[in-house]
Length: 114
Length: 115
Image: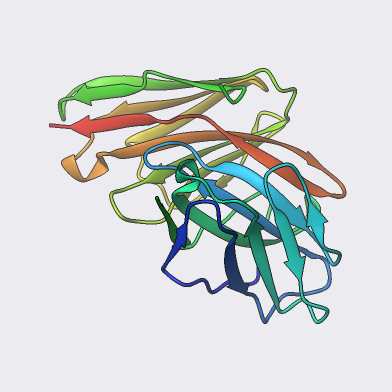
């Protein structure tokens, strides 16, 4: 699975949009971009995923560049409860590719300030 | 509640004890996982089970022994652990299909302290 690079930490003011970047320059055609977050000492929580097109759900939006080498997770109106470590993970689809593993890196510690 | 339940939430055990961690999912998923998260480190994948068959063991010491009796239950049996095994142990499940694996669901974890 392709490697990802994220900034170690970011700050955001409550009520403002939080834009979390992720670089995945070695991504290949069948690899999806997944975002998870982990609030302190809890299990990671799925946020969103995408392949090529931008995606939006009730939690966030995912913007993937046309060359797919980077993406941005957008939390449109950050709240204090969004303070967490955010993980960008690239993973190929299908059972035949490295089993079903999901490999976590260091992620970005997002701190939402009042 | 995420649909993946782990018990106990906290466990303190001596180095000579034997204990087991339990994970249960009622999401109809066919793959289950154990991850370990030590302090200030990324999550490390330990074991993967697809359709009750162990498909991955990431060089985990034999003092950790997984068991998957059915697709809804996963255990991690612990014996003669070391203090450095103290960590948050997370269970996850997913539905693995031919188009990719969407939305892993994690439990809340077991905080293990080895004394």
